[in-house]
Image 1 (cartoon, rainbow, N blue to C red):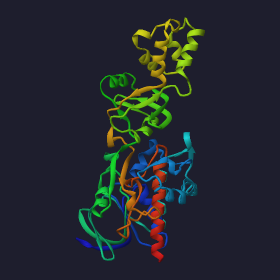
Image 2 (cartoon, helix red, strand yellow; image 1 turned 60 degrees about the horizontal axis):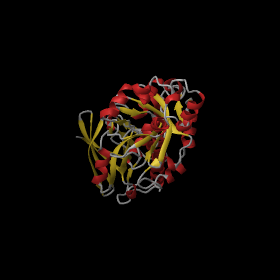
Image 3 (cartoon, rainbow, N blue to C red; image 1 turned 90 degrees about the horizontal axis):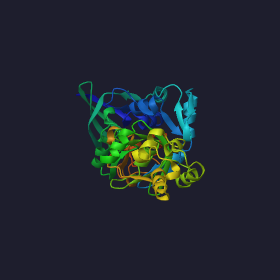
Image 4 (spheres, one colour; image 1 turned 120 degrees about the vertical axis):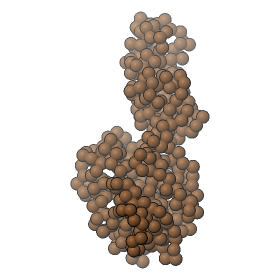
Length: 405
């Protein structure tokens, strides 16, 4: 075993939250180490946004986050906002652009964000160890002792503070695991139930066959679950439904409950169909509906019996049935694609055990949990990265204050 090395702060996880925390934790001279089992830092950043990284959202507010305690995220989000992170991006000369709904993306590559974070870490002299595995973490009289495995050797480390920033279970091919949850339980913290979030939903039987036949078709829609609704695109796949609106609603959906889909937002199919029957009775239903919906979707809705039928020949009952299929299509998902494709993990470390201003555990001094491992989950569209930046800053700034106290 190699001789022990001491740091003021050791951060487990070189993702968005971990690197952000490191840059601030060492701002006043504290010695910081970030380690990760991956081969490269910021792997989730690298693959996000199609390689362009949707790094924040201009509309980010606490209401855009799910948690058993919806108030917990307010402190960090209000003290380190999307505008604070955007200032950092601009300060590093990273070109960016806005897409829909306030989403901000890099013009060039997500790697620009990773480089920026690494540069910020370098400014304060933070060390980064990759391909390093945590073997053991324990509390000592003056901090923590860690046993890690690096380059085929075990090394004993010590630190005054330890930050757990190793994410959730989503995208296991990137190395995601339940380590953060295991560490939380080891130190007596409670966990809220975890599940895949921002994930495509799957179907079986007839609904699955319908989705397979429409695979590749996209449409604007409003997707409802209870009182929650999102208006964005949906995409039919060989497994079920995907697209932004489905990913959003997946965070709210629970097994055995249906979702409702409006395939023509802003258009009353009942009124429109009856108007067409009066004004264009000789025209085919399929031709008229193709002005509103993708043609393949129209054929699926109409079926073989109505595909060539004239609208003028249809009864109120038939038109009302079609209107419900268009504006109130109720479907029962049987599951989701799981952590394999989920963008984030819903649930995690129960926030009742954490200080919302510092992210420090209430009963273990010097132990912090930040980012996705915590029971705070954002909407699709840059919100989860903003939680990483805000919680990382809150933690790092608190540690910096301790360094000079």
